[in-house]
Image 1: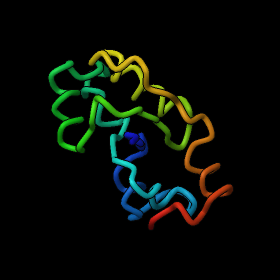
Image 2 (image 1 turned 90 degrees about the vertical axis):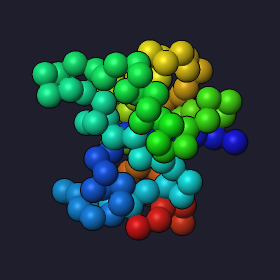
Image 3 (image 1 turned 60 degrees about the vertical axis):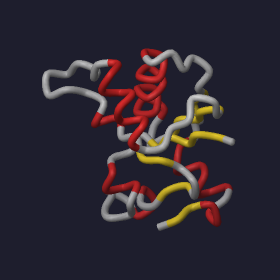
Image 4 (image 1 turned 60 degrees about the horizontal axis):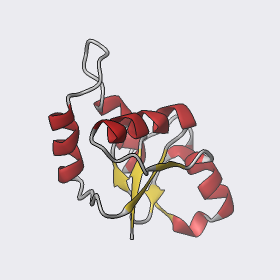
Length: 111
């Protein structure tokens, strides 16, 4: 089993909007964990407790392999940093992002 964490903004994950149509929708089975919600208004990363609360809310399971992806590797890397703070250091980054998934396996995307 896996935790697929999508770092894109919620509106793109849920297919509501995006600069490009290809940014809309999400990988079947993935969970929204927007990078922009991991940073405080002053630009600091949330506390460990706040990160754990958000992970619990989306059904994250520490016993599963975690893979983070988004529109860009930079965006998804913030998830890896947040996971490292809560001691999940085995998480992986899918560098290709949602664009590559849509090109290689469009049937896996739910709008």
